[in-house]
Length: 114
Image 1 (cartoon, rainbow, N blue to C red):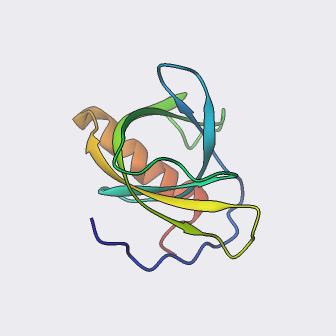
Image 2: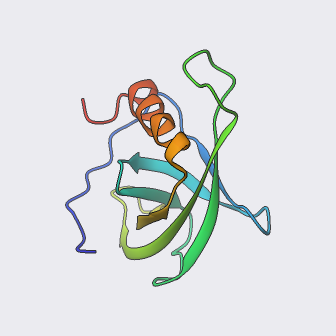
Image 3: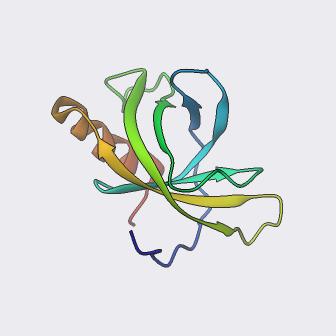
């Protein structure tokens, strides 16, 4: 996956992203589309790794589920404009078809793509 230009905008809130298997907090959702996500983290994540993630969703009426489970492959890493953060771009490699509408819910709630 080619690194796409990514300019982080301040979101109304940041969703926590956990490793499904270890429970480790990996970072926060910086961007999401049907093909990829960007993880904001205080450290660089290893590249070319396949990771099963759980994106925790807040208890808001916009969300029909408590979380979104996806498999991603880490593709690129770059420093954020804020030197405390790294941006890691990930390709979505596995998402259940019934979970695809949750991406739209996240984009709408976080005003991504507007």
